[in-house]
Length: 132
Image (cartoon, rainbow, N blue to C red; front, side, top):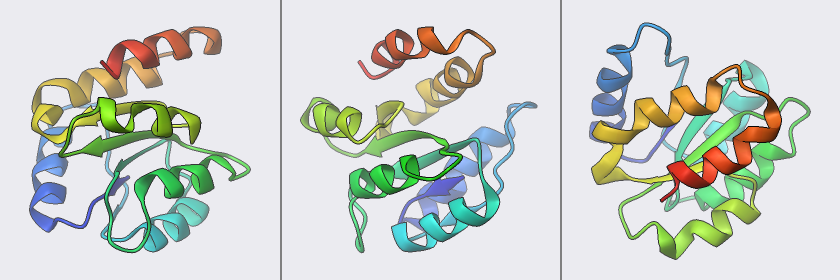
């Protein structure tokens, strides 16, 4: 699931993800409130959400998604320096953080690492690697 208040970014990210046979976008939201409703209803495996949304921060939305009975993986995106948000993102339970300018080169790899069938105990260290 994709969450961003930019329709252009949603379209381009959806096109990027369509290049992978094992990734399917099941929904898009332009607000965190809509995203939270969709997460409760649709139970996506992974949510890509912008840190700076208009109605609620992506970090707060992450906290709420992670409180769901079946929480999705959450990767936060930012137009700004990732290190600025890294501590808050991880404290909220985010599984990754990536700068928007790097989505084209890093997003599919991040998704594949997070959704691989490796033991759960290894996700934390890989999550750190993909947030660099």
